[in-house]
Image (cartoon, rainbow, N blue to C red; front, side, top):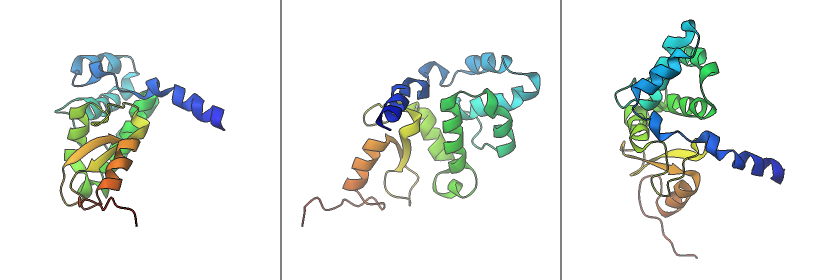
Length: 160
């Protein structure tokens, strides 16, 4: 079991968003040209949703499903994670501001710089009442959550 976990961890470079993809319409078009014509529109939409600062802010399941076979593993993870927060029930507590913030910080932890998208979380800085976010890795998110409750109030740090 430990060997399997170590093997998965050793692949973390495969799950980082390359900085050159961020806000790069030319690179997106290059990627789109390398997929079959019938899937190009869906792939363009998903890549624009992930990478362009002025890209779409909602991703529907049919377009996502059509594009998924042509996405890289980290793009599949990000698309699934973000569309659950910009569509349906997640839209109210996350929505467009969460997606825009993820794009802006370049899909990396704002505390430690960790970039493996499998471990990134959107954190409500002041609790779920306000749409102010931090992108945190699982470790930094856990540390922050132990210091502040879900309403943004500082927790007691003394032991009983």
